[in-house]
Image 1 (tube, rainbow, N blue to C red):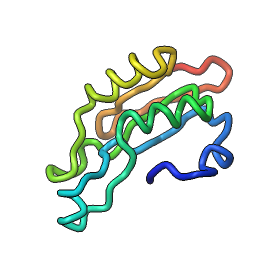
Image 2 (image 1 turned 180 degrees about the horizontal axis):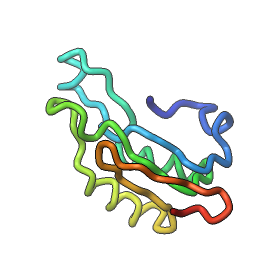
Image 3 (image 1 turned 135 degrees about the vertical axis):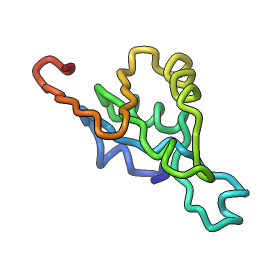
Image 4 (image 1 turned 90 degrees about the horizontal axis):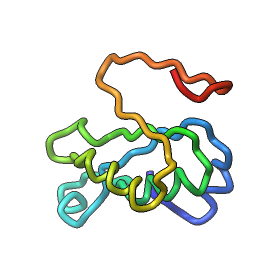
Length: 103
């Protein structure tokens, strides 16, 4: 998933935005790896759609298509420090309550 004109119109006021952060670049394109938005783009989109929680994904699925989760933390600090976010470990459960916005 990449940013495009009109995307925010479809996604306004989302409570939980599950967004890819593994990015895209020339090397991935050369190897037929379809890219996604990067950390900064994910934070900017979460901010634009007023997401209460950003759940970054696709950063650790494949060795050839990884992203450093610290880049997302840094992007949040720089772009939108109030942005909630959470990284999950495989199999981890989580209950998001619209009433309180947390576990």
